[in-house]
Image (cartoon, rainbow, N blue to C red; front, side):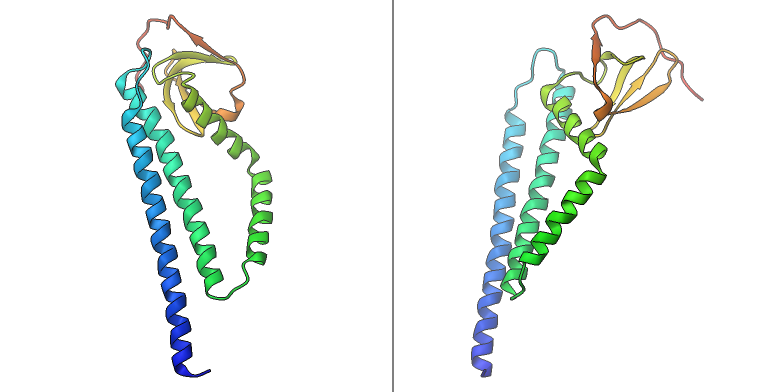
Length: 183
């Protein structure tokens, strides 16, 4: 193969790789800007404060933005590897098997994240609400995709994984008390 043909082939592959990277960047920007626009347009319900609504929308959109980046970057990486002449079928198969193994091994983590996503999406309870989970009763201090944190009457913090939230009682009249402060 003469050097001119080699240079032509290399420049074509480089142009395709650059096009893949630009398309990935553009698709990420479009999705991120759409999600941010959606974040600004979400109306708050009568039961939510502005801060609670912002926190919920910020959590959900950041999750979707990060998922978008991971998926588009992975697809771009596969396309670039394929463009460089490597067979990506064994890689795709290996990733699928690895994903299945990790999914089975991290079953509770995945359950926590999915449950947390739906808690936020459905607005089941908010920070500041008084709830009862099993035998634990307290004020919701923090809600994340993985856990909720409750503070009980004695100012004890209870960290509860979202996957273990089976029955939640939202208590309308929270007890009037000032939690003890720890030194």
